[in-house]
Every structure is written in structure tokens, then in C-alpha cells.
Length: 464
Image 1 (cartoon, rainbow, N blue to C red):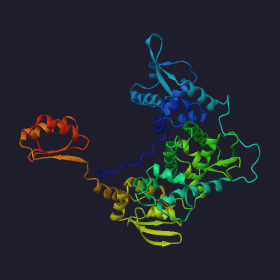
Image 2 (cartoon, one colour; image 1 turned 45 degrees about the vertical axis):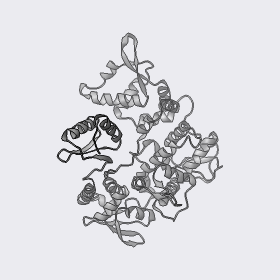
Image 3 (cartoon, helix red, strand yellow; image 1 turned 90 degrees about the vertical axis):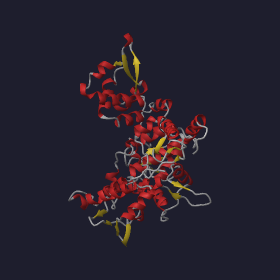
């Protein structure tokens, strides 16, 4: 077992799409919103290439496209080719005369043109025919989104101040590996991945949660392509605008109710006939790397930017949120708590406890910077460099050794026997460690059976 910690894998949009089957990707590109979302998140050079061939209905020779970049930019061009090929945005074809060329995916071309230029079938969500007599404004939607999302986080940290989450959300937390239920126990407990999840920023949390949900779409009798297409439509919606549910299928209405539970949409009643997307939904197509939630935090969340860290390792958190206090307690020793202030101290033991829980030093540092009080920005750095360095040094203390499962071979009758077996294990890449003088060696657990069979075939008296 390795002491080095595994970081929670939160794929961005393109990394996720690459994992989908080719047929699913091709169906996805029938949605203009998907094509626009994919195009928007491409690197600048990739977008440039697509725009130059968007109105070309035939393949373009590779030699011509290669001339569009400087001779010393071949690496960037290779990256463009690799990314667009993996996303099935274009494909390599053989042209007349044996020339090699690239052809833009016809479905992607048609729907991207429709999204950029208009025309054809309307691809955005349908507006209601009448005005909502109980319309909701943006501050209300922001508060609602954070309240609903924090219900999930409160449950994970064991806070019982909010309502219990649904069985669907519980199953999803278990499926994602964020919480687990031990044999013989009724209550679920948070896992190492769950601790890491708590310190991620909100947009990354929502994106990761949605990826896990989409992973279970088939088991829920939902069409993955339909769900993804709707999510991308949501990402291009207007905050504060209500949309109609009249043209939505039965499965999509069920999907909408799950999004409602997580705070991505607001719907007054299940049969209200309209819903409002929240900022959590508008953030979807960006994945974990960008966020509109910064404006949400500053505009409607008084607790945004609430942490001050001093060089004496003292942490002052100006908050009355039990969730935020619980998050700080993951890596701090709390000393005092007042109605709107919590005082803690970062110690070697509190950091080591966080590391044992599965949280990484980088996540702790990032969390402290992300939630730094506005006063900290007046005299950079936001987080004292001595604190950031010390947290990382405490983490390095645990990473000095790497432990791997293996099988020990010793008590060889001769040096020659030892050398034969060592060389065999080394040639196959399963040798972990060896000591020539002591005639000892360790092979990986997976390689043990192969090495053992070899030894039985080539030795009559070998022992392990």
C-alpha cells in the first residue's frame, strides 16, 4: 500500500468526452449545444483550425493545414490533431492522388454552424407561453442553489442541521466512493475521496457529482445522450429566465427532478410547467477548471472570503456556517468559537490527521487561498508563504517511503540460483527490490506466480 496519496480524478469536459464510445459521441454531436460547448472549451489553436475549415465541405490536405503554423510549432499542431481526432471532431482520410487530409465531422460541422450562425431548428430550451406570476430573481436562485448543494455537503460531514437527502443521492455518494457503509453498520461514513471532495471548489464538486450521476444513467433507464444534451443546453441558458417543460420527455422530467434536488434548477412544484436554471447549471460546460461561482460568492454569499491565516499558524474564520466550520476542522485544531468567528491553529498533528484522511497538502493550501478574506488581498501573498511551505513539508514527511505489496524470496542455496531468478524477475519488470549479499529479493504480487513457475521449471531445490 502506498503512502503517496491518490488525488481525486475530476475530468474536464474533453477528458470525459474522450471516454465515451464513438457511437455515443456521434449522437451527441446532433445537439448544437454540445458542439458549441466542445468548441468553446478547445485550445485557441484548435478553434482556429475548426473555423478555417468550417465552411469547407471536403477534406483539406495535411500539408496545407500544416503550413498554417510556424515551422517550430509542430508540437502544438500534433496536440491539435490528437485532441480533435480523439473527440471525433475530425478524421484522417485519404484524398485523390494518395494525399492525406483531414475531414471535419459532417454532423459536428452542421450543428456548430447552426449554433454560431442561427437558422435551422431552434436548439435552445423553450420559453413559457405566459409570464410566471411568482417569478424568482437571481439572488433567490443563488441562495436556493447553495442551500440545496450544501445539504449534500452537510450530510457528508455529519451535520444534521439540514434535511435528510434522498435515497438517490445516497446511492450516488456510495457509487462515487465518497461515502461507504461498513458491514453491520446502518450509517454511512465518509471516505478518503470524500474528504478530498469536500475541499474542492463548488463548481468542481458539482461537475464531479454529475459525472458520477451520468455514469449511472443507464441503470436509471435514462438516455445518456439526452441527459448530456440537456445539460449543455442548461449551460447556455440565461440566469433568471424561466423555461418550459412542455416538450420534455418523461425520462428527461425525471432527470430534471434530480437536478432540482442538487440545486442545479429551481422548480416550485413538480408539475409547475416551468423551471429556472441556477448558476450551478450555467457552470456545467466549463467543467472543474473555470467557474461563474466567483460572482455568485461575492454578490450573494456574505461568507465568501472569510479566512485569515497568520504567520503564527493561527486561523481566523469569520463565519457562522456550521459547514464551513466543519471544513476548517478537517485540518485545524479549533480553539475558540464565537457567534460569527472561529479561531483555530494549524499544527503538525492536525495536518497529518488530514493527510491520513486522504486530503492532500495542495488541496489544503488551495482551500485557504480560495477562501481568503478580502483583507488578505491588500498585502499579498494571500496565504503566508511560510505556512504554505510548512504544510507541504509536513506532507513530504509521509512521502519519504513508498510501500508496495510484494513477495519475499530468500534462503537461496547458491549465488548462481539467486542471480538466475533475480535476472528473470528484472527482465519482466516485476522485481521491486534485491540484496545481493543477503541473497534476498522482492517481486510484485502480480508477478509472483510467473516467477514461481519459472523457478519450479529451472530448479530442483529452490526455496522461497
